[in-house]
Image 1 (cartoon, one colour):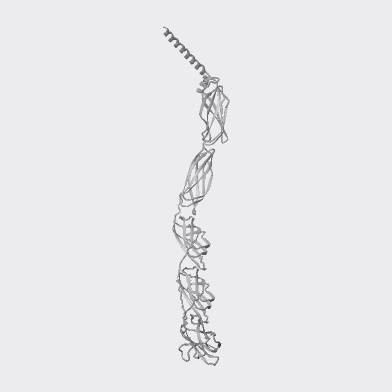
Image 2 (cartoon, helix red, strand yellow):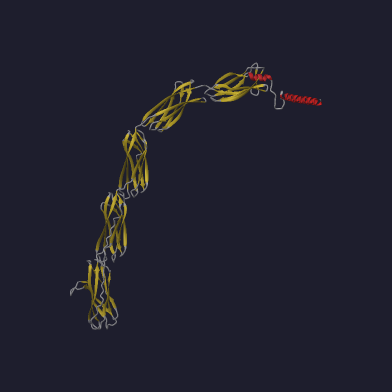
Length: 600
């Protein structure tokens, strides 16, 4: 709260209602008035008193002014004298003269005075005295000083101001202003204003900083000299309250596991009312190793925030602590420190890893599919998966990281030396600061590619047999260069358009269709087909006897009539014609019989 102390100064001028007039009938002289400046003087002011003497037109001669004095009223024959001038010259008939006098009043109060004029007529040297009453009131007034300072935060430099108002009737000079405080550091504490004119004001700004919370007094002192040469001082005191304001620190961490490095953040929120500079944030812990533990912020503006990341590794399970410490500088250059501590609950390390194994068979390759499941509460790193077998060569694989609750799958290719193999799979990994292991077993089987003929069908087609079917791979490896050939025997001869059919490659567990043709002599029960193919570079040949008895008999009976109406129609057309002829003959016989009956 600012206080303004005002000292009022009032000067009163009392003017006599009736002027003093000379006793001589030939001289008509009077004091017509007295001007006083300043009108409201203060102690020490130089007060100008200027009476005006008039020699009227009715006078018969000039009037010579010998002496003008300002004296105490009621002082008798020896009054106190405040001003005195002599030999002021002659005032001609009809003329006036203003006489300048000055005095200083050192004490406040009301002064009853008289202006006394002594003079003589110039024609006959007749002496005359004039008197004029004068009252001057001097009040103890001073310039006003007003200190303006708000409450602040400890350690934060804040702006303040001092206003100097000159309410006196004359300028004040040699004006010097100083500001001091109790436990308050002040910059711009001294200012020289030289001169402040009457009814004018000047404002001086300053900065202040209180480093400790509480109430503090600041006093502005004004030293000045009045126009009368009097040097005086005026003071004004204000009390400000300083509070403890500090930035807020918020520590945030993930779930913590003993021996495992986790992530954390510290958010610095600046609400102290001014910018923070050169802010250094450090993070430490009791029983906790912290990495990236120091961050520097050049500047954090008021109302803004900044975030720093860090990594930490608790050594043991249980309740541990993390402490964030912020050192920063305020606007005024003060260095302050604030800390925040966060208790963290650290879980014990759970190393729980399972392997899910399955065999993969396809083409000419065999493999073991391994899924690494992390069922613990810490990530796995440097994961190695390796397979071994006494009768197979198995590959290995590496994984970078498996997070808790996640899984990763790899494929271990295997080259088998026998048709079956037992594969032992082992996975090793780092979890925390220790090495872990998980193991499992699975079986691989190997069935070489084998071509069998399936879906066989033999049908007569013209004067030949068409044998259709599928070359099916019943093994677990590919069969290549597969060929189906009609075997030339005493009663079976391969014929066009396909004496043989080149199937090509038949993948494992797949098939390819084929058609081959043969002519036969008489009835045959089977048609032999050779199947040739390569597996892993080795040639295989087998003969399949295809049942052809029914098709052979149908072929021996002859071709079926062609109902299409085109050449080679077989027995269908003669039979139809015969039926129509028989029907016509029957109609003629019936009509003849009816006619004979009617004639009777």
